[in-house]
Figure 1: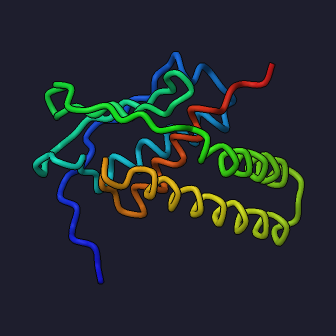
Figure 2 (figure 1 turned 90 degrees about the vertical axis):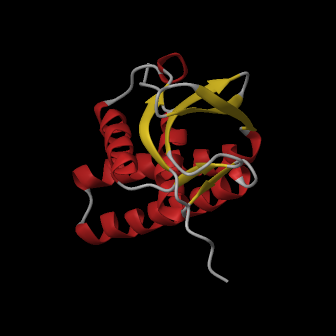
Figure 3 (figure 1 turned 135 degrees about the horizontal axis):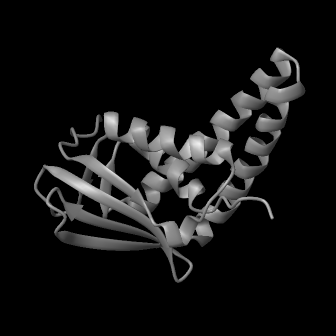
Length: 162
């Protein structure tokens, strides 16, 4: 049975600077693309809210992932805190494969890059499905929105090398 259409959408996304800090150009580029893509096309509706436009601020608070949702005018509506524990393994796996991918695009053969990228997409999809599951009953999103949100969740963990 197909899921009913999600009629809400995000019109602004902010990453908490205190949670993420500065990072490498590759990571900053990935964050900017994910936010741009997310705002271009998304389906996002907090449970119990009427369809409309929403603002989202993502942060790490007390070792939890905070989804701070406001209406289009910026009035706070709800904050959902999700345990990071279920996401730790998949985020770690995603980091490892992204590191391999960034190394490969500089030196590897096209077939090797393609193989690593296929693995990267598979891990990303797994993280997206987990995020949908973790948001169930809190915020409704479609798969493509979850993919972009998963990228941003990972971005909250990426730090510039020391």
